[in-house]
Amino acid sequence: MRTLIISLMLLLTTTHSFATETKMPETQTKVKLTTTLGDIVIQLNAEKAPISSQNFLTYVNEGFYNGTIFHRVIKGFMAQGGGFDTSFNQKAVHAPIKNEANNGLSNKRGTLAMARTNVPDSATAQFFINYKDNAFLDHSSPTPSGWGYAVFGEVIEGMDVVDAMANQPTGNRGGHQDVPKTDIVIEKAEVIK
Image (cartoon, rainbow, N blue to C red; front, side):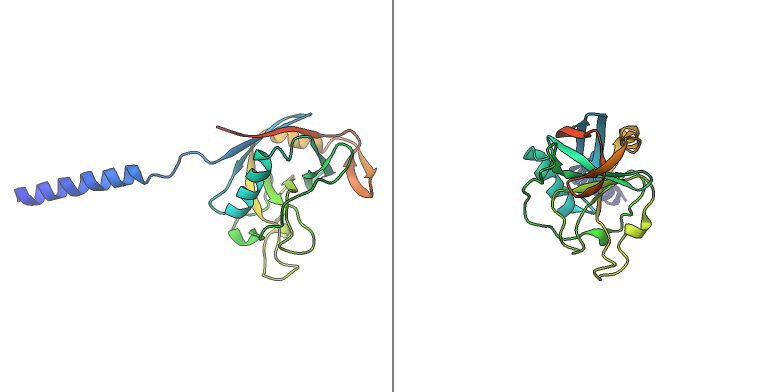
């Protein structure tokens, strides 16, 4: 009996030690966008969207987003940014990434997703923030029309700033529609603790 108790104690100690050593980090990577309307804090979901999250972080760490604008804002739908500077010049980007829209994450209010062309694997630097639940943008099938848009993060602070963007007057600029008439600039994008 004594041997059984000692064995159980050793097993519990070893299990506790192993669980402590392999514990997942308590925090996910967070990025702060300092904009002309206020700060937006985003929490990335690297577990379910590792490619998109790493891609976004690469652009953040390179300072790519600094000085870019939210160039397409549609109230009740989404706010898109990350591609144009204040002169409405499109910035040079890295190669497109694989579409991760089949990761189980939904385009719900406050989530960030990768913007892309009609080609499923065409996302580069541009992203959008959903104003409402846009389930029709989710992955439904591995076809060009069903691939959807990959969610990779969520606004955890500053959704009021995102909502304020939707109240800005918009118009046409550089062949694009729904462009805010007053630039909404991402002054700085940075990883925070």
